[in-house]
Amino acid sequence: MEHLNDLYRPEDLSRLEKKIKRERAWIWILAGATLTLCVLFCCLTDSRNAGRMELAAEICSCLGGWLVIYRRIFGLQEAKHQRDHVQHLLEAPRTSLRGRLTFTKERMRIKNSIRFRVLLLDDGEQLRRLKVNETRVRLLQPFDGKEVTLELADGYVAGIEGEEASGAPAKGGRGRSLADFLKNIWTQLHRFVVWAILSTILWAWIFTLVTDTGPANKVTLYVQTEGCRDQALAEVLDEARPEGIRMIQVHPFSYALFDTQEALNADLYVIPASQAEGFLDSFAPIDGEELDRGDRELFTRDGKSYGIKLHDADTGETTAGDYLVYAPGEDYYLFFNAKSLHLGSGDGAALRVAEALLRLK
Image (cartoon, rainbow, N blue to C red; front, top):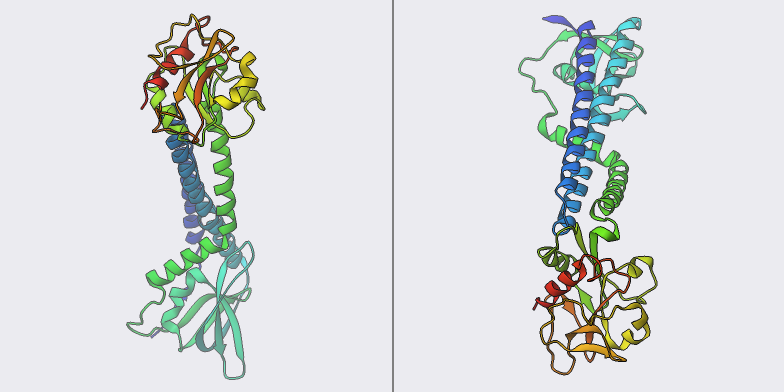
């Protein structure tokens, strides 16, 4: 028995308007949740977990941004395109054609608009190529290979009348949905890559601001060794962080010692004895400082003591060997910046951090 199946109804517009509102709400929820989590990671950051919190924020921002991009393009924009298409076909004049309907595998997309499927209609005189919105394909599949009467609106199938095959299976299903999802990802891959790069740069910059502070609130150690587990060393020194100090920073470097302003503003230095001679004017003598150095050998010149030995090349005795890799044949010393705000004349924080360093094995 033949019956008319109208593919577009006025209530479809109302349904799509609701979907547009839902998708817009989901985008705001996802964006808000992502931003909230990233801000939370910033608030939970200290010098011991800064690396992990930064990585967590970057991953959260990246994944959240990808979800927003996907829902905006394939949720919100897709719903808007469908709404405009339905509205256009409801207002367009209609014509009728009768013939044998055949599905093809040809799928196309109008730029910045809908995707459609190509159909063939054989009316006995010619073979016509018609289009149907992909969202309406499942409604026409039971009529594949049947004699039907089609209602057309602006070249699109808007209605069908024919005898539906009983028990005809609907094509598509989960496999088709997965294929469409992967195809969607591929077509927008450039957006996902750009967002991943931008979000990584953005949160790296933000965490630099979050984890940094002025010289008065931090103690900075510069290390010139063969290797340095800077983050791990900063974390263990942070456990002995003096009161009033917000963070301990450790910076490894292999370039000239005083070639950056950041290095000039440091409080402590670990450098080889062979490179220390030229910078004694920049180092603070430690004579008279209240510093628990044990029986370690001092770096002494002109009757003044400037540094504390950390590594003895002859005996192999080493301090903080789990964190610093010393070059063979070199003695290493811990020196203090004469301009540091954290010596005995200040709050003494650099001395307390130095003591924590000297206690490390």
